[in-house]
Image (cartoon, rainbow, N blue to C red; front, side, top):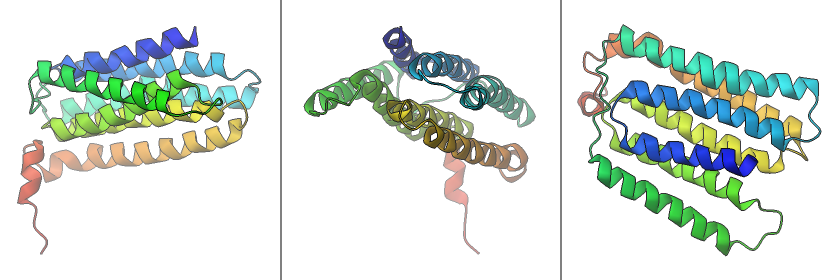
Length: 210
């Protein structure tokens, strides 16, 4: 069951690669949060009530509800167009995403570690690399936050590899990434519309140090 959920999570990366509307990105991020909750719930065999509450807050409340609502509000508040405006065509993005997944599969097979769960490793690294690719190939600044969230989900999946042995360590990591995410979202929420009249990343080249 976990493998099926992780494969679905991997498929969402391909969907994001060909999606043009930022609202679609937001919906995919919310869906990924739901998938992560079920993956964690099944993966952690000896889960305590405290761990369950923390993971529920991180995945459902934060990733599936709070972040999508914040991102949608930022789009509306700053009159950001709904198009993601990628630098590359969708077909090229799909090819590159496929290449990323293939490379991570080959890398996982080259690692001779019996404790390594390869499906977790592939999904985690694919999410990390795809998030960086999303940041590098989208014009809108707000899509960089979405790329960061994809990277964060990849780190979350990677942390599950040691979740059974060190659940509190995983929870500490979860709380740290919540703090970082809220901080970044807060900056964008309060400043993006005031500082930039155009939210295209090309405008960042106009910044000067006085």
